[in-house]
Image (cartoon, rainbow, N blue to C red):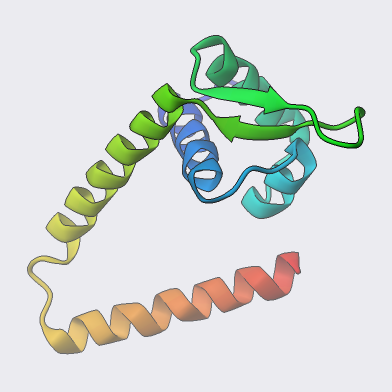
Length: 118
């Protein structure tokens, strides 16, 4: 199966955005993103090779924490700005009632995801 460029970009962006909030292990990242560790590991190698993330040693040497480099922090800020611009463009024409409905639907989807993936 051929992977779409957007899938790769979205997964890398999601990894960077999560690491902008907290350092974590690969397995913690997999749980947070509801993704296979093999898929995430592939992207982590690319991000590390591009100088956007680094692995830090802590007590348990078997699994290291991932964190953003300065370049990774800058890239995650760029992604955040792009996401805000994109979301503003999407909801810019919605009225208050439609925005309220959208918020309720997104909450319902989020609640389902949290329940399904615990």
